Length: 216
Image (cartoon, rainbow, N blue to C red):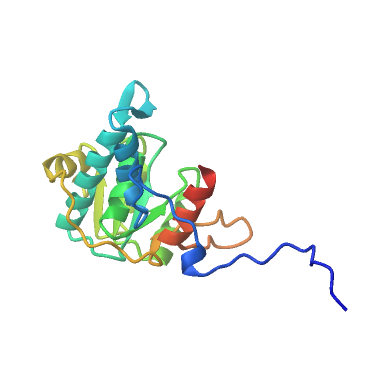
């Protein structure tokens, strides 16, 4: 007896070959999350990417600045797999720092600036962050948190914190770093800790690439 077609949807083919990847305008697949600014520069060049309080970045400028940030972090001693915490507001410094950390081969740990200091200190310790990038918008909190990590950066510098702009501006805009593996951790955000301690949620380059792909 011939069976009728199964109406249920077929399971997703989860093999590496079947997984979609974002691609450059020229067709090459992205190799890791750090390629996202490169893809933007390739596709849109001098077009506006970000605007914040009168300051603007083109896609090409974001690529250059994130390359400089990556080189500055590597020169300062950041190694592949190191956790680098980002305590920043929504500003131009965030995307360049975020992608700079990832291009350096490290793992970005974004911190919620609405979280109290006790939880922020917990996240720094739990993640094993070896560096912190913060903003002059949060001078006292940033300085306080910097005491819990070996290395910290803030634009303009401060007691116990390196001058972020000085390091980035002095770094090369050309990036020459080995690519991280597609299944290496790229970003490690944390839950709010409403019912307990905040919990880290490591996501890989593949996880993020799939998210970017489906959001296109």
